[in-house]
Structures are given as C-alpha cells and as structure tokens.
Length: 354
Ligand code: NAD
Ligand code: TYD
Image 1 (cartoon, rainbow, N blue to C red):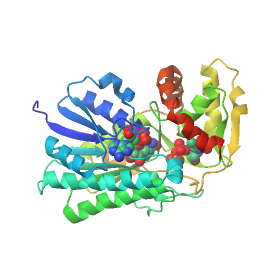
Image 2 (cartoon, rainbow, N blue to C red; image 1 turned 45 degrees about the horizontal axis):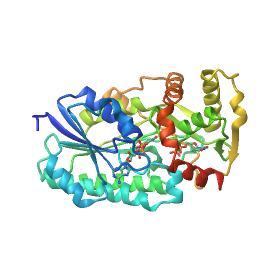
Image 3 (cartoon, helix red, strand yellow; image 1 turned 30 degrees about the horizontal axis):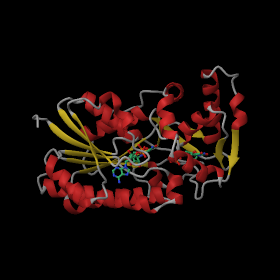
C-alpha cells in the first residue's frame, strides 16, 4: 500500500451524512487513505459516491459492524489511525416498529469498533482518534424554552435515541476506563442531497412532485433545528483534526422550524421550481396519527464548537433549502431507484395501513 499519512475508517459512508463526509475527506486529503465500511442496508447506496469511487485514496468495503470477527480482521489488516463512526440505524419511525436492529447495530456494532481500536492501538494512542457521530436526540425533548448544551442530561425517548445514548455512554466509558482517545459530537437534524426519502424533507419534496399526500404527524407543531449536511461534514472535519480528546461538541444550525411551517415553505419552493402556482401543493398536506413518544422540540447550542474551533454554518436555510429542493428534482433517477422495490412496502406499512 502507498505510504499514506493516515489511514482512516469511515463507517456508514454509503448513507446520507457518511457519503458527504467520505466525499469531503477523499477530495480534501489526498494523502489520507479513506476506507468506507458499510453494510449497504436499505439506507446505504453506492450511487451516493459515484463521483469519487475511482479515486486512488478511496476504498469501499462491504461489511457489518455487528460481525465481531470481521471487524477485528479488518482492523488488523488496515491498522487504522482514525475512525469516524457514522454507521447506524437512523430512522425513529423504524425504531418504533422494529427496535431490535437498532440495538445490534447502534450498540453492539459500536462496541465491536471500540474493542477493535483498543486491540490494534494497544496502549499507544499517539495521534490516534475514535470519533463517534451522534445526535441531539439523546438529550430528549425541550419545552417551549431552553436549549441543549453539552451538559444537558441524557433523556432519550425513542428506541433510536436510546440506542444512540447507550453507544455514547460506551464511547465515554472506553475513554474513562481504557484511555481510548475518543471524541463525540451530537448534531441536530441534517438536510441536503442523498438523504433517504423516509426522512421528512426528501419525503415531502418527492410527494409534492408526485402530487401525493404530505403526511404531517399530529398537528405539525413539533420543532426541529435544521442544519445543511455539508456544514455538518465540515464540523466533523474540524472536530476530527482539532477537537480535544474526551470532549463532546454540539453541532446545530440555530435554525428552529415548526414542521408545518417548514412543510409550507417546501411547498412554495417546490411549486415555484416545478412551474406550478405558488402554494398549490399545500392542499396535499394531510394530518396523520402522531408518532408515539414524539419529541416536541430540539434546539442545539453550538457555541462551544464555534468558540473553540471557529466553526460556523456556511449556508443559510433559504439557500440550503433551495439547493436541496433543486437537487431532488434534478436527481430523478436517484430517487426512482430508491423508491422502487422495498420502499413501497415500507411506505404502505408506515403511512397507508396506520
Ligand atoms: P443513514 O441511515 O442515511 O445511513 C446509515 C448508513 O449506515 C447506511 O449507509 C447503512 O448501510 C450503514 N449501516 C447501517 N447498519 C450498518 C451495519 N450494521 N454495519 C455497517 N454499516 C451499517 O444515516 P444518516 O442520516 O446518514 O446518519 C449517519 C449518522 O449520523 C448516524 O450515526 C446518525 O445517528 C447520526 N446523525 C444523523 C442525523 C440526521 O439528521 N440524519 C443527525 C445527527 C446525527
Ligand atoms: P424525521 O425527518 O424523521 O427526523 P427526526 O424524527 O429524527 O427528527 O422527522 C422530522 C420531523 O418531522 C419530526 O418531528 C417528525 C415529523 N415527520 C412528519 O410530520 N411526517 C413524516 O412523514 C415524517 C417522516 C416526519
């Protein structure tokens, strides 16, 4: 193997955020070897990485982080200097209907990676880094006031957030017990291209385009703090290189939106791009049964990351949403490939039968 400055493992690199992180690292660091490990579940898609798949510093490995022997073998083969761990089951609604997979991948999978890193690094942690990517959902739900800081007590409510909270605790425990050089970041809701259309924004754009009902849970009053995915990827780059070991960094857009207001805005932007009269698609809005245990509000205080590492979002929400709607409308083939087959079964179970 060429003499690379660092060999980095990125898990879950064929998913939404992972593909943006892989692309950024492969292009920005030609002197790093980037190994993308992904099981290619329904959410993993190599089409997300077509533009970089032939780069000489990039390698894709198909595999399951739950498979302990496979993970140990992979770490022995590559002797990674750093791990950026994004692989996860990531959708709250799926964690409500099928929780067990979340326990295996998000908890056992993370422990397998921690053990393998501990095994290859022995006690020599110089310039080594295990960076775990997590979510603001571990902090639970806010009322009308307040904001999540790095000190907010964990209070997860869904099987998804509980499994992510559990993995965060284990990552911290491996630092406290074994001195493994770990870092964690907890980010708010991401949006942008290549997101699987089970999540709110791509699902809405796709339904608006096809004149299908837009399912709004409950009264649409829940609030999320939205961040453009490239700004999350930039934060991950900064934290991986400059973040302090054993620290936690919150990442967020300071950009809170009530679901119903966001959906109306998406209707306006999409209608305009499709040449429809502005607002026509609002008639597609359909209020459906609320999500069980639905967290009311998330809001992230990212001032530690801003002050300590100089990060700030590069794109405002209006620009980011314009780009995002444009991306999904232009990438019809990507959407069609994903929404054929199994997606229909998921959609019927989630929305038609409920
Ligand atoms: P995603 O569902 O789009 O992608 C997850 C990827 O992990 C997929 O490519 C999938 O194939 C892979 N994967 C799943 N199980 C695996 C296994 N057992 N072994 C190997 N690979 C496996 O998820 P995402 O939205 O890109 O989220 C990535 C990470 O960021 C997750 O850890 C998630 O908790 C976290 N996060 C997401 C958001 C968000 O808004 N999407 C916000 C904050 C944090
Ligand atoms: P989602 O994109 O699933 O992210 P998360 O649950 O991790 O925040 O959902 C964002 C918000 O949109 C959340 O409050 C649930 C709501 N939602 C709907 O109202 N309808 C939908 O069809 C989906 C998928 C989500």
